[in-house]
Structure formats: structure tokens, C-alpha cells
Image 1 (cartoon, rainbow, N blue to C red):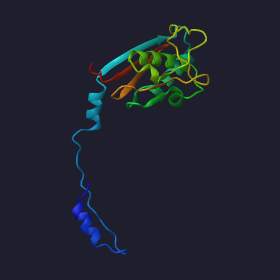
Image 2 (cartoon, helix red, strand yellow; image 1 turned 90 degrees about the vertical axis):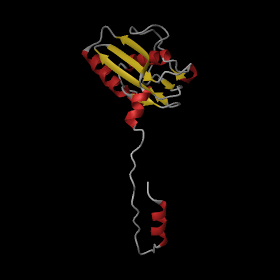
Image 3 (cartoon, rainbow, N blue to C red; image 1 turned 120 degrees about the vertical axis):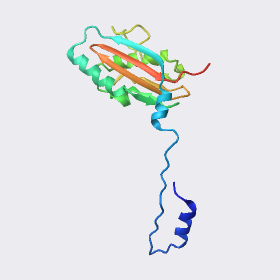
Image 4 (cartoon, rainbow, N blue to C red; image 1 turned 180 degrees about the vertical axis):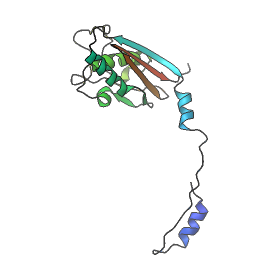
Length: 173
């Protein structure tokens, strides 16, 4: 911030040939981003796991790369998440990660009207019927954070296993 009176005094004596200098006053905030993050992401809202039992080394590498793109992704209220925008459309094994995220979103009680997903024609081996999501050129899994507070996606992979946790603030009933 700066002192308005000092700025007005400086400007009143300004001529087009002069430059004006106004001192800036730095004020520490009462609440920092670190403080907000501590309070916002305290609760596990949901967790989902899928496992590709016959994963090759290439599959495992792909899963790790995809998971790294969505891990720590935060959404403020009413913000839309598009799997394809975050991960890309030409990525192998994206469907497993999208499906795991889809189940986590369902379990987190995200408003169903805010979820847009396409199912596979045949059920993939890593999930059950109705709990899959297509990503990439054939579809884009999207959802909107319908919560009153920001949420964060926490994703990890190990071998052919993918874990997705949605963290945020539990809403009071």
C-alpha cells in the first residue's frame, strides 16, 4: 500500500517534466497462503484405487507420468477439471487414471450434475461396471468442484496400482 496523502502531495506539485516517486509500504498479511492450505486440506473426502494386474514396464511408466500431472491439482469451488486438458489426449493408460479419479469424485459426493464421463464399451479389468471413465481422443472425463471449499487431488502410482484421494474440508451437516 502507500500513503494517499503523500501521493496527492507529490502529484499536486507534478509538472510534465518531473517524475513522481511514491513510497510503498509493505504490510505482512494476517493470514498467509500456508495458513489457508493448512486449514483447507485437512480432511480426506474420498479415496479410490485401481490395479492393472498385468502391467508392463511401459504401462507402469505411463501411469507414473499421468499421475504426476494430476497430483496436487487443486480446484476452487465451481472450477471445472478436464482430464484431457490436464493430461493430454494422446496418452496411453489414461483411462485407468481417469477411472480411478472418477470413483474418487463419486465417493467425495461431488454433485452428479457436475460430472461428465463416457463409459467403455466393455468393462476394463481394473474396475467394475459403471465405475470407468474414458479419456483421450475417445472422451474427456470432466467434473466441477461443487463443494463450498477448494479440493485437492492427491494421486500416486506403484506398479500397476493407482491411488487417488480427494482432500478438502468436510462440510457441516
